Length: 176
Image 1: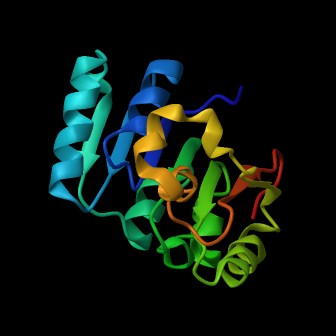
Image 2: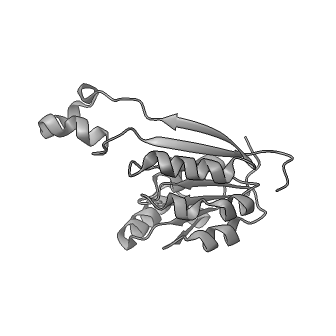
Image 3: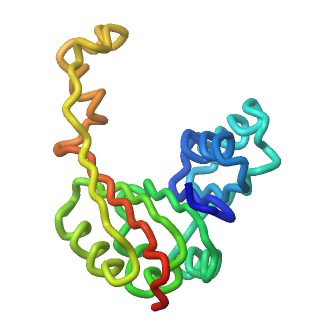
């Protein structure tokens, strides 16, 4: 495992990744979400799991905020920001995140263009791996039976295409 200094979770919602990574890595976590109710839930989830002191919960993370926070540091960044990926992960971000690993969920709206933009920005400084969600069978989730025909849509989060994640792993020894 890499020697991270901190975790940044953009689009933290109720804290699934933020709290889980705090528990796993025992590191401080910056958790960003624009929804006040989700921030409240994230704080509550962190407290219930004994990692409240590790979380710094904030409302909004734009490009300058992310770049300033991570510049020159070794962070693990997880982004599930519902379509804001291109604005956050551009060429400027790639330069400032050259020591950090970044996991970005690519959303279905113009998925290929977003994917190409992010990969183009990070290709010089990071190794790039792509992961696509595999199909899930609604029959494996009997607790969703009450949804009838919509059970399959529910386990796919009502998405039209498979979720795609891009893992940008910084290249050791590269100085951009």
